[in-house]
Structure formats: C-alpha cells, structure tokens
Image (cartoon, rainbow, N blue to C red):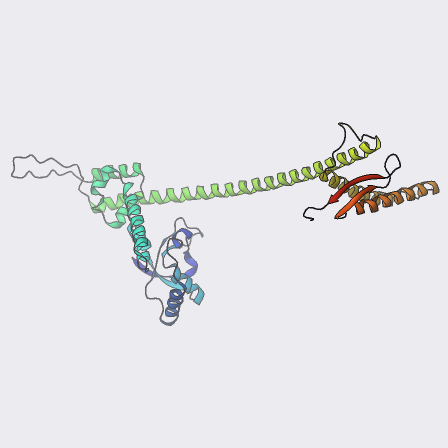
Length: 359
C-alpha cells in the first residue's frame, strides 16, 4: 500500500469502522499519546478513498485503522498524519482485522473476530459466478477487487470478453490409456484483460455514485416526511389534550348543575339521587372556582348598579361567604358534619369526613 501525508481535514470517520475496534484502556491511550508527542507516530494509519466524494471535487479518505492515533493528532494540534492507502478489498479487510489482532485480547474475543473475518472473506468471493471462479484465483489482488464489484451480468460480460480476446488451448494427451478432457478455461491475456476490467470498473464506479446520490436524495425526502409527520402528530396530541380539558370542564359543569338542581327540586330520595362521591365534590369545587373567577371579570365590565341591585348583590356575596366558610370547616381533616340550614330550615346531621391515612 502507498503511504502518503494527509491533512486531518480530508479524513472521514465512519462510526461503523470506529466501533468495530475494542476501546483502548485509558493508561495505554495516554502512553501512546505521550510517545507520539515525544517521538512522533511510527506506524501510519490505514485509509481508503471515499466514494462518492462527499465534499465536492476534493478527494477524501475513510479511516480503516488507527482511529486512536487520528484522535491523538487532533488533541495534540498536529494537522497532518501519515496514512497508507488501501485500494483492494483484500487490503481493506486485512487493515480492519490486523489492527484488531494487535490488541491484547482474550482467546474468546480473538476467535470471535477470526470467525467474522472468515465470514466476510467468504462473502466477498461468494459474489463471483461459478464459471469465473475457476480462474479468479489467478488474478492479482487489485484485479480480484475489480471483479468482486461487478454484478452477475457484468461478470458474464467480462468472461465473454476474455474468451473472445484469448484462444482456447487443449491440454496435450499424456502417455496413458485414459483420454484427457479438454478444458474450457480461457488463457488470460493481461493487457487486453486489464483494459476490459478498467472499462468495467469505470462503469461500476459511475453506477455506484449514481446509486448513492439517489439514496441520499431518498434519505433526505424521508427525513422531511418524518419531520412533517412528527409535527402533525404533536399538533394532534395538543388538540386531543385540549379537547380532554374541555370535556372535563363540561363534565364538571354538568355535575355541578346536577348538584344544584337535585338540591333545589328536593330529590333527596329515590333513583335520581346523586351519590356523595368525592370526585363530584372536587368537580363542583373546581366549577365554583372557575365561576367566581369569571364573575370577577364580568363584574368589572358591568355598569354602575342601582341601589336595589347593589343591595341584592351584597346579600348574595354574604350568603356565598357564609357557605364558603362552612364548606371550609367541613373539609377539615375531620369533622362532624352538621348542615346549618337544610331545605326545611332545621339543622341536618351529616356524616364524618376523614382524610386517607388518618388514624
């Protein structure tokens, strides 16, 4: 791999690659930082070209190995770093896993990473069509990387191009009675094959760039749609909450009106009685609180009262004050409820109110 000097600004950190490495202990990290500060970095990090270019026309590089050394350079204010550039798939896989094996890992962890490496390597070869796999091992690593990026149709076209560019040679029979079969494997002409592979690689890279551009556009559209859906959901939740408040207020008003009507019409017995439930009491108090608040605002808008109306209003307020004081006494932690004036004008004996938890 070629080693070059790169500005830190051109290096892209892929979270998936960075998270693949076990974290370095704090003491080891500090020791490595001290060594780089005093002596510089001895082993270059490993990167690969980023495709497509995310920052316009300037080529960037994705870090494959050496994330700690990259981070230490940033912390020390060193704005350039030595980096080896991995081009082929084999180089990229080796860069990822060789850096892992250099860590002091237990046997179980090493075995797990070895199995994962073997799985990735098998996956890279599993994409090769059987007819091309026979000669796949004869190619160099960079040619293998180009072939592995072709889809099935591209590989079949490549094999057809190779067959046309070469001639088939039968094997010479041996001095045995057994007939030697002819081979269908083409003999590779490196110069012609390299030209064909270069054209295919260019087509693959252009297709990849277009596919990733389309994927980015789709991702942005989905993000906008998701944000719009979240805003619509929030608006709906706010509307539902407001409607619940209105329903609770209306229920309080209805129950408070039932209490007044039940008392006024004298329905003290029978199926129309309202049970003395605590929630009805709380709803009635809440309604009374809102009603007095609204009356205060409304009174400020009413013109000056005449003498008769003023006297009637003051008498009503005195009666309300009497009832409120008595209600306050009834709602003390314990009380022996005695209603001062019932419908018949005589004191009525009430129940005993106690708070939950009172002993």
